[in-house]
Amino acid sequence: SQQGEEDPQALSIQEGENATMNCSYKTSINNLQWYRQNSGRGLVHLILIRSNEREKHSGRLRVTLDTSKKSSSLLITASRAADTASYFCATESNNAGNMLTFGGGTRLMVKP
Amino acid sequence: GAVVSQHPSRVICKSGTSVKIECRSLDFQATTMFWYRQFPKQSLMLMATSNEGSKATYEQGVEKDKFLINHASLTLSTLTVTSAHPEDSSFYICSAPQTGGYGYTFGSGTRLTVV
Image 1 (cartoon, rainbow over the protein chains, first blue to last red):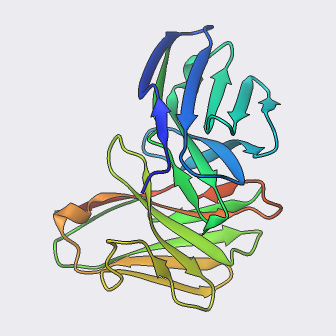
Image 2 (cartoon, helix red, strand yellow):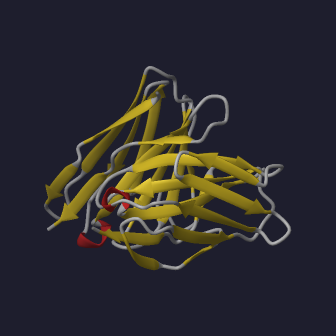
């Protein structure tokens, strides 16, 4: 079953704008990961943030984690048309073995 | 970086036949492989976890006799959809954890269409 919810389910923005996606989860976690999926393709790992971290950056990506609220956000700055994809958060927790539990995903469309 | 090679990428089969999907870890050993199913515009749902040299662990509601998983070596895990029906049509994806706890590597997925 899915761990959490992602918000929004779909997001459409213009190139150059920032895109923010949110993820909420239910149980305590070891880490939270963000993945990108182009249509009909596998997932690409973007960034991992551990439960004792609050913010992490990677290029144009910024991820925050608030364990008190059981939520995370992914910010893509200066978006490009090539960023168009679905983005999923996934949590890893001790009580779920080593497996990932995915959120519902956000479908991002960046218009040129 | 670590790569998981998944084949075939697309397969169309007739109802009642079986289809095998392979996932190979390249340049690393995958003692564990996770198998997911994804329906259109939905998230990934874990089907089963395979471990090299032991029986797979299936999630609730997943028929182990229908979705046969074999993980006979540290670099190869297979999922066989037996007696496929149209409702088995879906996108199947495998993934293996990267060493050092830096996330997971996913295969490119297999689009199965049962006609």
